[in-house]
Image 1 (cartoon, helix red, strand yellow):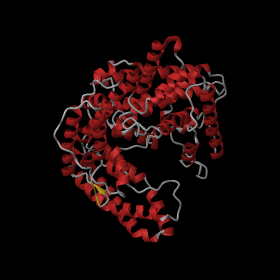
Image 2: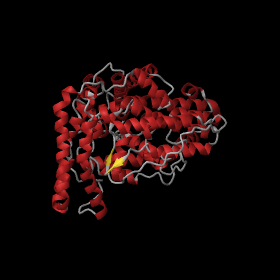
Image 3: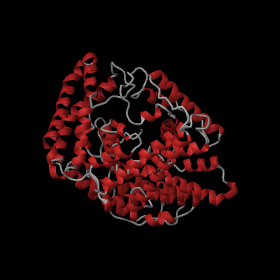
Image 4: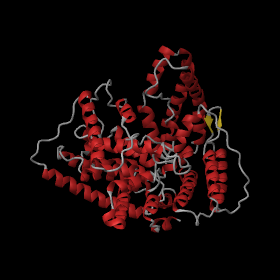
Length: 546
């Protein structure tokens, strides 16, 4: 999955270890009313610069003093935004206003509710140095400098981490469990040390100090884990605030649970009907080697590309090509040149039989979205890859990619392939609804992490393959660290279908699938509620949010 995300600030840190960031000049705190769109653009640019952490000697400052100062200054930005009146603007410009508002609210939620720097050890536990897959040894001088600075910053970073997490009873126990598990399982640093010894021995002393700091932080977590007893869930009230003010979601926690439960009923029913329909057909056999796997997913990619063009699903621009996707795909866990795993992780037990849905989700959904966004030069709406800051457009990012798996099946992309593929479509969907229910109930604090994991194993198709799997650990961490992530995948798909229905009703016989899809994709990586407003003119949802 492309959900290799932790908090947005983590990614800022990765770059910040090398490039020292200075805070932008703060303007006057005097608030003056405005209805000029250019004032929104100026405020947005100023806020994006402000949102970066202060960096000292390559180490971001997440101390209590720094965070209190940041939160106080955020309030000034929010007051200035509230003084801008967008009511006379076009819908497109008003959408930009709401995107800026959502970003500011996202930072507020970080400070007011999540404060991961003081309650989530995994916020710091992901800082083990990793190199890009395509970086070859011996390293170039620029890469050497980059890596040396990272090594030198790590001891001070973990020293600060222990200080920031010193209120042990306020640290979330489940998040501490994730941090310990991930650091214990991560062996990439040892491989890096071996390569440094062979090619760059001058980097080894700094690398050893970094290693000692990492191991020291892990030991400190293990020693204090029993004292870390706070809940990782944010509570229903905070969850609802986040949905409304950050994700611009027109539903409450109760609404989302109802939608997810109805979807779970549907996909399980459809899965069983498909199994009965196909009961006399020979089963799909999973591929059993790297060569077979590569041939399988390459064939799936070629198939879906031809399908999109021939069936005129949406316009496939010249730049929408799988080249970079295939490069990343071949370098991953199942890439050629790596040993074929003795035990496959959960999702591969489906994709090794029929890879079309997974490749469609990742390539047609996420990769093509990424290619579009990188060509989007709109000053506010563009420049927000994947779900954007604070997961604002997660319902669009994951809801659309997930929706493609089943909706293209109904459009015909499984025709001519084994009918058992339809069963796999629903099996994968059923695991998404299980994860969404775990998301909802862990954050409402009904379920512990252990209970959520047990629920997934008991209720997901072939759930026995999930037990203690890397995939289950990954998905449960993302749903605790990214509140509402998995719920939005399911409900975002429902939102897309709502927009689809609204446009067909508006256009009647004039509705053309490709034109609708181009219109939808052209709206950009923004929440579904804003896309619906722009495409249909219906403002009933935005009125609930504003």
